[in-house]
Image (cartoon, rainbow, N blue to C red; front, side, top):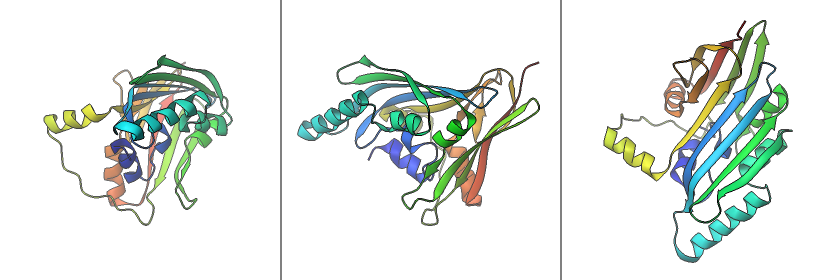
Length: 227
């Protein structure tokens, strides 16, 4: 299991165990979800430097399976979009040999599809991340209700030095960005908001800190539509 998957499980499948690569396949990725005023959304996911951390026959088998699942649209990201009622607009290889690079462009046509795509269950079937889109007048809100499973504990974390942070990032980068189509973000929790207030990055560390204090928290962005 790669470090990004382990980190995701530590946050109770937070956003997105499905956003990270499986097994010992590692790489860099950037996912951008653009939410429209009606709650529909566009998704773009780019993966680069995709390779196996194993060697020999095991690495070959993992990469073969990765290629086959991507081509068949049966990897976690394709399935997440399709199972939510979304459509795949584009799915292609940018680099078709190791280290691989891919891009997936998807559409979630309704707020209900957006909510389903970002709602996750644990191994026991209990919901650990519940997504919700709300609108009132010109105000919009997308929230993630995160519930830490009873058998998981958030351990204390220490601040990393710049060198430690860069060493960790060298193993694999991963970011999830929520962007809004029209308007400005006016409030947020668990996200780092861009200076232009038009997008925000998911902050797993902030959410972990909140889960230390209580087993159920809400991460969200809230925005006001443009006139």
